[in-house]
Image (cartoon, rainbow, N blue to C red; front, side):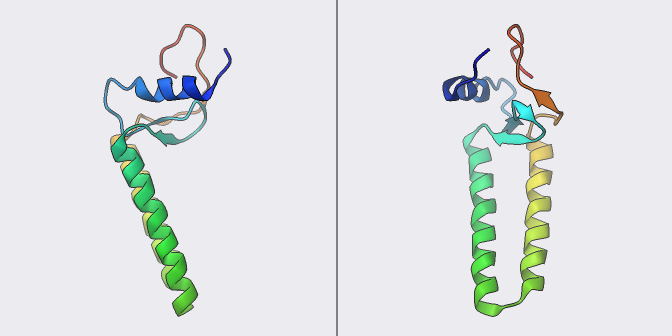
Length: 99
């Protein structure tokens, strides 16, 4: 089966349980599937950008490292709580509706 962007969007929209994050089609991990998932990911990125600018202005790498560790831990915890159970996947087969 040839995977296109349109097929991937259809996979993300096929979300009867309302997961914020769905499994990636290839590999291990999640992709945001709802507006809440995109909000969480955007907030994570903005926190890291702000921390990077504060590192540049203050020059304290310890604070940046703690912000980095805590924000990654929070993102993973939210993914486990609101996302599909993670597992390694190699795409969908022709007769399968979910990985």
